[in-house]
Image (tube, rainbow, N blue to C red; front, side, top):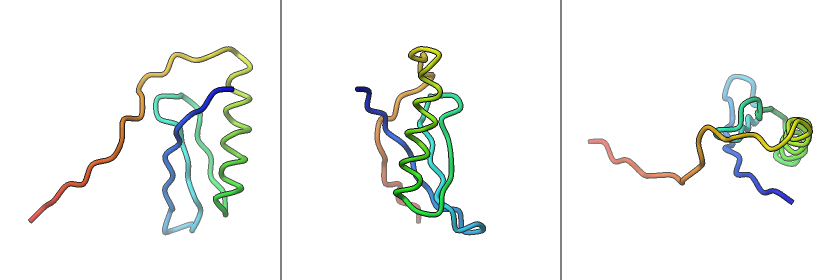
Length: 69
C-alpha cells in the first residue's frame, strides 16, 4: 500500500474542493465534498499507478506561516 499527501484547496468561484498530489503529474481532481474528493484522488492515483510507480518531480515538505506587515 502506498500513501501520498494531497494538497486540498477550495475554489471560491465554483465552491468545489480541488486536490492534487505534489510532484505526481496528472494526479489532480475536484469534487463537491471532501469524501468525494478523496475517492476521486484514489481513483486517479490507481489509474496512474497502472503504468508503474512514477518518479515524483517534487515531494511535499510542509507548510509555513509567513508574516507580512
